[in-house]
Image 1 (cartoon, protein in one colour):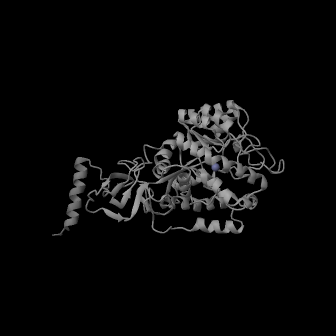
Image 2 (tube, rainbow, N blue to C red):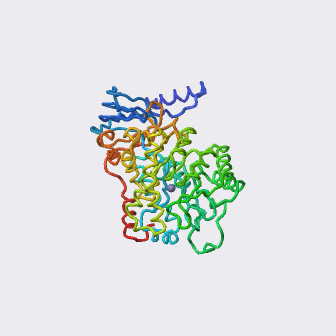
Image 3 (cartoon, protein in one colour):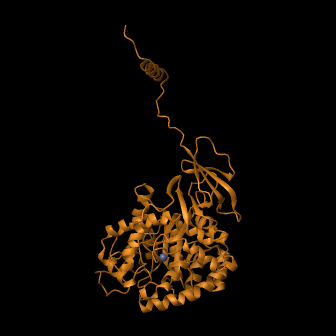
Amino acid sequence: MMIVPACCRFWRRISLAILVLGICPTPVRAAEQQIAVKAERLFDGKSKTLLQNAVVLIQGDKIIDIGSNLAIPSGAQVIDLGDATLAPGFMDAHTHLTLDYSGDYNVRRLHELDLNVSEQAIRATTFARATVEAGFTTVRDLGSHLVGSREFVDVALRNSINKGLIVGPRMLVATKGIGAVGGHFDPTNGFRDFLFGREPDYTDGIATGPDEIRKAVRFEVKNGADVIKAAVSGGVLSLTDEVDTPQLTPAEMAALVDESHRLRKKVAVHCHGDQAAREAIEAGVDSIEHGSFLKPETLGRMKTKGTFLTPTLMATEWIMGRLENYPPALQAKAKAAAVARSEMFRNAVRMGVKISFGTDAAVFPHGQNAKEFKLMIDLGMTPVDALISATANDADLLGIAQKVGTLEKGKLADVIAMAGDPTADIEATERVVFVMKEGKVIRKGAPIVQGAAKARETTEEGAPAD
Ligand SMILES: [Zn+2]
């Protein structure tokens, strides 16, 4: 008699059961291991006080519990960070992860013409990694235009991060900024006429009249824009415009906002000048970026209408510290903007305008975004309010507050930790020791990749880095 092994008998019974009951065998996945992240303190993104002896319990990509001295389930992996403060992943509402403007202005301008777009895209992957390793798990990337190129490098970067091909922050991208002929976003500004063989058009974001503005918005959404960015006044780092003059008409701004909002996209506008800001606020934009010359009455309109201000203090700070890197015309514009923006920011804080944290990363080296916090505190903001601006406020502005921005049960597990207590020493925000994005640990301890730092070194030397 043939002896049938026990395991075979078992499988025969299972097969029979499947046959009789019509059960389709589906693989049973073991429950994902829970992770308990512990630290002495926790900032939850909305409370003005810190939670002590904090525990955040994570399973899969979500937070499943949170509390002080929370009981840790058996079998959970414990990450004890000790004298540190847990916080929601920081957000930066104004970056340019595909660009690096931090070196000498003219050297950078020349190398923009040298480097092929694929190489610039590869460099951008190191900028994305440096940003998330600094604790910024979400960015709103406000404009990615590589002169003479029709590529959408920011869309490619966002998609590659979402697919897990590269490591970086969650990105909401604007593709090419929309603006006027000869304005801040005109990529041929300052070059010899027709050097590139044609005038830029709506496919470059350059448009004239309400209908063309609508066409540019539709073109950008078609190609993957999550948010619409436009330049409604002049800028500091453009050669042929004045920093505070209006560059779109009220009718163009109305078309910009109407078309974007119909397509459920928010509108962020680069704007230093007061007149342009007043017109943009009345048109219904969602945020004013920079806002250097805004008068108190204009800030009052922002408060009434709920318009966010993204102050990007780091951008002027960086430029003012290295004025010799910029042509004389830009130096004069930077000085004027720097003098005006401090008073404007103090007024905005005092008046209670909604402030979204944003830095203009690319003007300075990527990964130094957290230096913005100290600048905000030095100009009158409280540490907790600055932390709220980089978490709950930005999530609100970006339209993703239901998923991220605070540490709460059911939200995505974007959790970071800083050594020390940022409410006592705001520069703790520059000492991020732990980064988790959607339940996956991206950094614990020293940065994993030094690529961005290396790229920066070559930039400082003037080598063909940017
Ligand atoms: Zn910018």
